[in-house]
Image 1 (cartoon, rainbow, N blue to C red):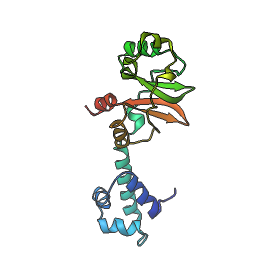
Image 2 (spheres, rainbow, N blue to C red; image 1 turned 90 degrees about the horizontal axis):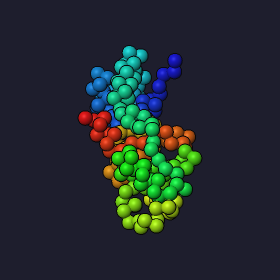
Image 3 (cartoon, one colour; image 1 turned 60 degrees about the vertical axis):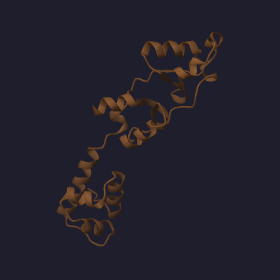
Image 4 (cartoon, rainbow, N blue to C red; image 1 turned 120 degrees about the horizontal axis):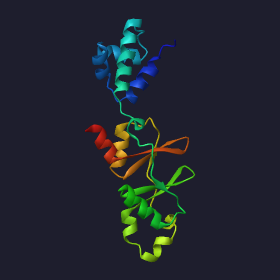
Length: 179
């Protein structure tokens, strides 16, 4: 068993968005002790270190991550599919937008607002001629805060692993989780 270094403790605390005071309260130690441990000024007793690590693990388990929210079944179209196919899928699934994916990689998006301006002649053209930018991508361990910030500017967030699409999150997914 390898014990965490002071730098490890500080990094883990900051990644979880905890202040020294919040960690101290949860671990039932003083904030100055946390500061001294993180600064490398003092070596804590094993029992104290255990309380701190347990407090960090509890905080980590409370964090909602992308893999907790994502839909693994991503309804999408390919860039060379006809626009009419995107319109049909949106209608069938009752979605207002779709990801455009090529070989597992998100390359764009298409929405009902992209389709509204098209003539009937354009319905046979490939989606890539009318698609918008791709939804942003994050890893499975992205936090709810990170995803929420992206959803303030985009209609969806794609979840990727090794470059491949493994899921999608929309505002509806977050609302369903929080309700």
